[in-house]
Image (cartoon, rainbow, N blue to C red; front, side, top):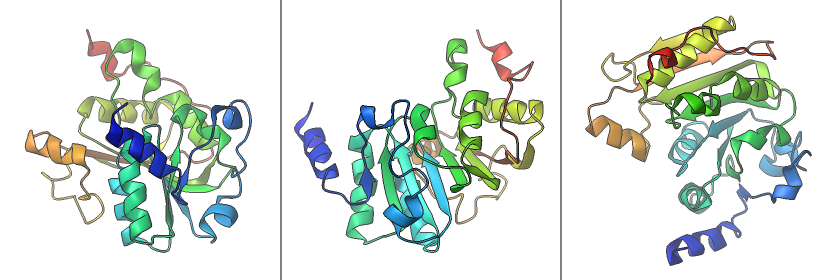
Length: 239
């Protein structure tokens, strides 16, 4: 492990805004903060918004700056990357921004029913290989996890450079009767990129330089708890 990475891991341990549970704290059991994020972490009753696969935390921090009356929690397994967002939030004294280092597969262990108001998924790995479809963060298995803690009126935002993932998620939504409030295949080309959607991560800046269109979806799960895979998805065209 490089010196910079080791230094960041050590500094992460000093950040009050970062939660880094041990494996045994969450494997087949609930974390101590489950159902208590408002009281024990943020110290208020403002809505909680998650960013899944937050990377360096750029979106989490930017949203926290724009909405001081909401709580934002970036989630990722890459501690050396999250260090940047956590440090920025600490230095700016942002009480409404936090970070959780864990795998998304364990997310059920952290949040109680209705505890989360919104979910942002920004530029996730589209998992284009056929045997990796279930790993997509908008796959039925993950949606079922989110449905356990997302408020019935809560929304899921997907922002990605992958038109394939965009179309796949639309197919999942259609197969499960989900409400698609917005589906935009090119937020910059269409002029849809407002001050929220135009927040740029490092990855997004790179994709825009390559001329890739950035897509956006906003869907609601409603009361649905069980999700099935669509009969036909863009994956039928993958080799």
